[in-house]
Length: 225
View 1: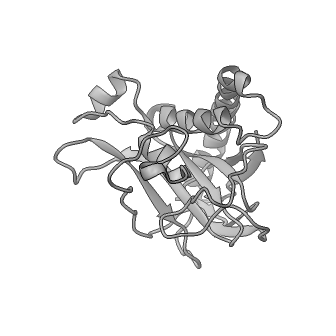
View 2: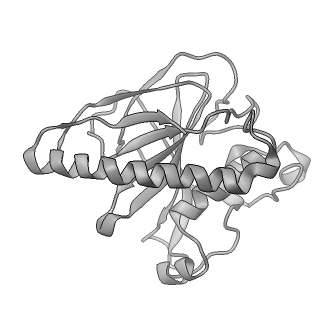
């Protein structure tokens, strides 16, 4: 692993797309959401080797401080205008996205435990289960209501960490949580964001691998998209 800066400063009440290098020039995509209480939560779709029924699942990972592990992230890309209301419950153990809040300084990787997603699932519509307000976790947990026993089957049906990220963002965008971007622009808008992040991550991956090879410093970038 290259010599990596430990802390990355993120804005409160924000949604970031994070990329990590994988083999064959591909990336793992996830969402990092900050709230007004100096907390950050990683939301991701990932493989689940413990399940006998499904190859992958959604989970939440809180970023506790201080964090000691170095980063394997190429970049955090802030989705401009995307702010969740305070009652939209973005974390696994309470807290909202509303309020003020100072910048959150977090290490880019955590050994914290993954939190199981809520059960039972609630319907994504105007409200959540039992008529309660829909939460960000509801959107994330219901993005792939049907998925499969193998990774290959998931990929054949368009299910991956990347498609999960952009379907969650599409749900937020369509509900008006991306200020300054019309809901009707969600398709081309997200495609543009994906292209920008993919190209940028390809460039950053080269810098990351060079830092790995020569054991020099790599700093995870924070940029707006």
